[in-house]
Length: 299
Ligand code: SF4
Image: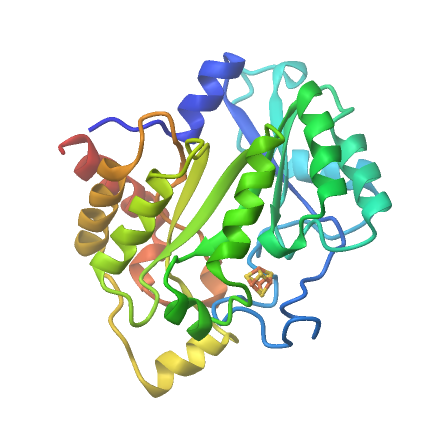
């Protein structure tokens, strides 16, 4: 079975592989600083759902360091001046903070010639019309994606994970972002406690039916990470965690629901090994990706 992966989308568009540079905006999150709650989403670790991100600081330095990390894995055959990158603000809520400063940061990052696009991870309840208008203008120069952590459409699960907003908030943001011409990437977690495969497929079907068509989706395996509320829950009351074969089957079903033009940014997750409690098989990235690719290509 074929689906449009992020690397294919980027290769088709830019004629080469494009790499992500993880950067920090210095923002916190209203679901952790007490504005909505202090606890955060139950699966969120100290790194704010971005445990591989950079330290906040001077943008030149951040980009230099992020490039050094990424370039170390790129073949020397690709000359440094031909490499292309997406600037990715992943950790915490990257539109939650001083709006003028954030706009300056987003604008500045797109001035780097090697950076072809910008991806901003945020919450749907933290997107002002002014920020959307601003991002829409930037999007005319280089592409801008806004990533929203929806995780599920089911309100009982959303409450249990302490997401801190209801589905209509997502719907309103989706409408405003897409009307402004911005590309939206939605995160879904597969394996939240209490959710059956059918519940997860309902979430994916809902996203597959969105109008306008959803630009991108991240299917993320639930990771139980040390130091999270989810880890406490799991310790007290262990719940079902997917085995790799079950997960492959479920992801296969999700992919069949999605429109051909929706870009699949991820089919699993990448929780840091040092924090990972379960499922331990997910720590073997190579095995996971090979097994999943093999399974999907035979569908
Ligand atoms: S919204 Fe994101 S950063 Fe905030 S608590 Fe939830 S997962 Fe963590």
